[in-house]
Image (tube, rainbow, N blue to C red; front, side):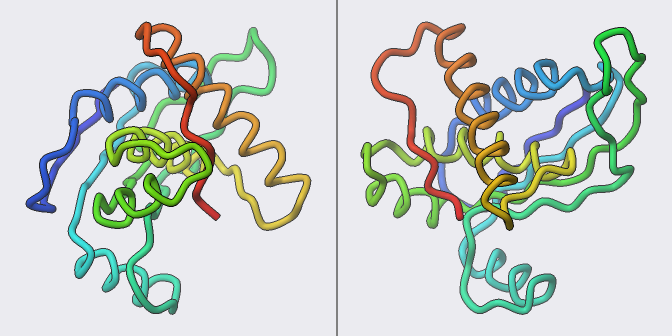
Length: 165
């Protein structure tokens, strides 16, 4: 799995954890090991520009996903997953920090960025949360991936509650 993490935000973030949880999520979703992903960490001004340009919404947001080859998880366990360019995930640590503090189970900016990374991966794989049933599926899968990664890493304490909308 080729995953690049590029921090352009000026904020110190745990890039290794972002890389690790992205790799874990893609493996768990059975994405081809030769697929490529880019994660870019930007400041609030850059994120706001992207949010306005692509979503026509004001202000910075927490995560945005830009799919390339529209890869999907294989439908059956014996299917060979296709390889390709997954796309880009853009994260904003300033928004992540605020959301982590406001979450029902308060958590750090880095924990929120890990959650947002998984959220972005799922969007790249075609998951969405516009409808209640889609939201339940996506957020359930997101929680299972984050919990699985945290357990594998031996991290204790409650997993971050979803704060993305």
